[in-house]
Length: 222
Image 1 (cartoon, rainbow, N blue to C red):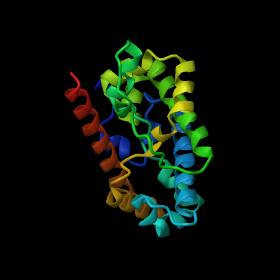
Image 2: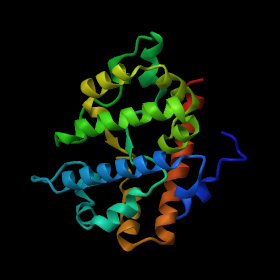
Image 3: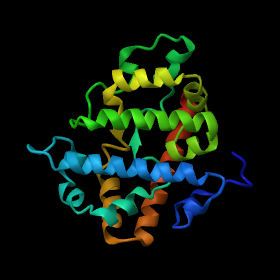
Image 4: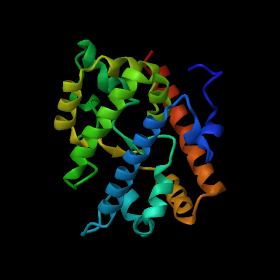
């Protein structure tokens, strides 16, 4: 990234982050729209009967139910994607270069979501990520938490291959940090409460975790 033009995570996490011109308005509006779809899917899953087994849904069911339209908008206005499809996992993409990847290294096999529209969202998220690495690599690294190695690997995929992945690996669609219930509790509570310092802090924390994960992923596979 060009550090002269790229804001710090503190700047991005604040209320003014959509004004950052280097990211591009279209990129950010699509990100917010995707995050709304992600959050709606999670809230709908949490409301399913019988109660879902995933702690992220089961333990936070009351918070998910409070995510009305304004709170949804606030939560969706996050400077990173709230879903994960393995964009930070180089091992999952090594097949692009002809490397034989074991099935257990291709990502989760048990789907997090039971609702049919999760498959459509998976395809949309994968396609969004693919377009970012083709056109806005710095944005892909910030918004998706990609390491430079993952950017290179995903860039080598064709759009047809991205579609095939969506069809064949429905379990790839996972909420970001699915086992960290406390992070999500703080984030959702802040979004329900309103735009303010707690929500800015929650956004910043997510950015910091994403950046650390991307660094760790890149370093462990060099």
